[in-house]
Image (cartoon, rainbow over the protein chains, first blue to last red):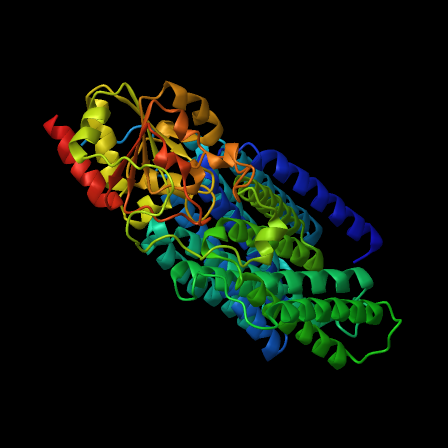
Length: 98
Length: 482
């Protein structure tokens, strides 16, 4: 990591935090559970990190760590999005009349 | 296509993914668009993951068969388990599932940081900044992993909900934090070349840091009572986001940094909102030891100072049926009794008679932020009827009957009027402003804060002593007779 890379990364980090505050504070309390579950699935993006370390792995220990990270990340992503979708589809203006 | 071009395209795909996360979250600002927002976010995730996989394949040397097996196998297994759990979970059990997903997310972030360190330790690639991010990622990820598992266990009832402390537990927490901090200093000095340590020794130090962080996570959450869980879950969610961002710094990936920062910010906001709604500082909650863990269980009626007026089913039914405006105030007791459907049935009946019905929902009703709204949505309550505290409070004065089911402390006027009360200053629902009040409650047993509720002795209040579900079902039957 060069100093330039580091500064760029920190700039991205800080700006993304500010965007996060801005976007999240507009979410109504009614949707806080799906919001939390939805953001929960977003941090499943660490699965991309798991893929990168899986690609770089060259010994059994690293293989093991990468595999567990992959399983964890995938459970986080897939489960998170599916359960959020399940919750959000229940929020209706009016129940459909039978 | 040249490798540079592929690299640039992959970078753009990551950027589009990150933008989809932001836009998806933006669409969560209304229930009407929220589902599309989540789907957009999921599409962004899919794009980022596929782009990464193709990029890894396209690079000189490509992916080894083992690496492909790890990625595909890990995805199928982890994704399959996640899908299965997400499909079968009951809405009441949502907080523990979110906690569990949070735990594995934190664990994955920690593993990514650790594994990267294993690769670069002893090489010139290890610079001070990397060492800091590795340790932060490993520590925050590990704390979230063990802490969220304990939180999930508490919510599931596998770990007792009440605050658990043992002699010296605070000392253990402090010592593990100290050990992790000392480890960070050692590894940073080593990375800076100020301390000559073998790679093996540095790995051992990182191992110790991780163990300390795992213990810290456990002793952090154990002393926190079950009803404080909305705050804990939000905080741990924020931690995982931060850990993912740290992992992003370590592997040098912008989409991890952006996504992690978004989640970190979101968790921080929710944590603050929840703590404010309980009128307690985040620190006070994390220190723990407050309350008994959970409401529930029964004691005989009696015990308060003032006069309590009990009313019968028929009286209550007549009041409700001839009202113009009714506000239902549901608390977690309603969900525990699985009374959401009976509640909705009553509301439907009243609406059919021309009564205006809405629901007043306190921010901490339930076991995670906004939990009660999900439970009512599941019972097909239309979301325009779900009113937030600030929105609904001015309406109580124009309300004929406020029907309180399973809520207690959040309706106690002492929070406004009695500076001596432990809940003084806590934002509450102004139920006492309604023209009349009906409280469905099994007994006069106090709520989580362990104090009497003045609302119950108010001359406008009629107490309907019954279990939430049976009481509502009997009310439904009684309203049909009116």
